[in-house]
Amino acid sequence: MLHIGILGHSADGSALCYLECVRESARLLGDHAHPEITMSLLPMGPTIPWWEAGDLDQINAHLRATAARLAAAGCDFFVCPDNTAHIALEASAEPYPLPGLHIAEVVAERAKADGHKRIALLGTRYTMEGPVYAAAFARHGLEMRTPGAADRELLNRIIFDELCLGRFEAPARREFLRVIEALKAEGCDAAALCCTEIPLIVTPENSSLPTLDSTRLLARAAVAVALGHAPAPQWRGGPR
Image (cartoon, helix red, strand yellow):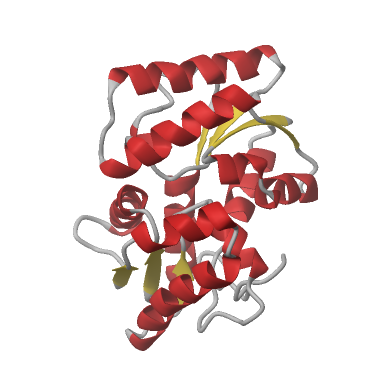
């Protein structure tokens, strides 16, 4: 089995990805059985001003340092359970020290395989307004919708001020579900939960649309690679 590296950026999403790697492995291999998994998580705090300034070079230096730790630990490949981080990863001019799965490709492939056509994208403001998912969905022939500007700001605030700090409260859940319902009215047939903390507050049971859980989909894709059920990745950052 290959050694999975989890390149963490935000804490709760990284922890959920780690746990889902273990749970998916148990479903396939039996209790207490899973590939070797190493997670490295440098604090996200220093990167917040860089995100606000659009300084992707500094962000990549930060993420690449984490990737180097994973490579030194003997990981065969990495997953980064942070959708926003993939904006920086795609902009990297320097290859990462080990190959990685691309979260947007994993989500887009699942959306297409499930027969969805128009996807409601929920995430940070950077993810909803950025190029990563627009390009990934276009490559797979999928339409994409995002909330209006006011709701994009609202969800972004909830993510950074609540979800990333471990606060998962009813008012925030209601706002996410309201936005999903509005995008359903625009013809969306699935909701892509593309901040890795959103699945901790929005579930298939409470969402009015089928959900594409980017965190768990990435973890399951990582296990498939580690067990040899899917090809090892070749991407080392940079454009897709």
